[in-house]
Image (cartoon, rainbow, N blue to C red; front, side, top):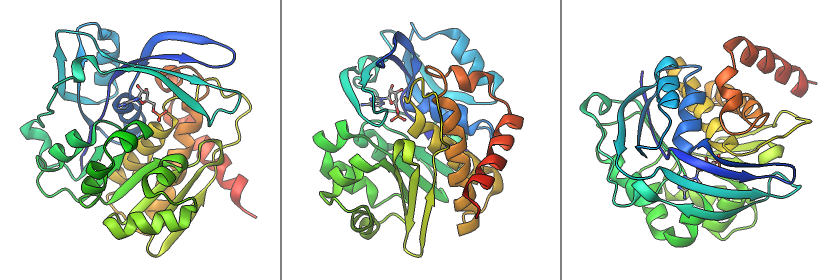
Length: 299
Ligand code: AMP
């Protein structure tokens, strides 16, 4: 099967109560495709400026990520700055410089158009809709979004949702989008708009997978040292969809295991800044943590 990931490739400036890092590589598409690459060979779509490090493009290739859909344009790479408080679930966006994404219309390469799974990671919802129309009958379309877009383009998001099978969003975003504080009621509102599944990410408390005949709660692995929570959500989605692409089945047992793999992958990302932990991660470590996870939740 094949998985196309459309998202941002970015420089992130991150401040935690303990440390500040300037312009390290991040972006929703970056985290997601690196996570998915542990299970499949994802195809990435996005744009970077000439300032984007060639070493990261090399890393993508080394990890089997298809970069045919990645444009390099004159100008600066997307830049996002965020600050975390003592509660890692609370973050504030300080600035967003869209740079080369200004006026960008993604064009899906011909070789990507027959993809089975399409993930519209966090980018402008108008662009997300554009992409759905460029892929021929995918078996599964998933999307993510964030407060920035929910605030500025809620109607476009509801419109895109009609064409999507899975929504990934964090609890705050789900409440904001539906104007509904209860996550079950909020989930039902989203399912009524079209998706088959809502995956509500709850930071260090895990995620809730909600469908018409499925409610599955997945823990976040208890982690003593959260260095940088950035990218946990995108990594979760990458692990989840990468696993589904590998097993080629979308039944409830596969969805449950996909959610656990998503959580396992995210638990590694937050152990270091940016993509650093994903660079050294091995399949063996993933499987060991998956087994630990199983022990943790069985009684
Ligand atoms: P997460 O922590 O999984 O929610 O995702 C964090 C990533 O999202 C960072 O690496 C940012 O570069 C990226 N990001 C932040 N704001 C935006 C935005 N408005 N559009 C696209 N990507 C964004």
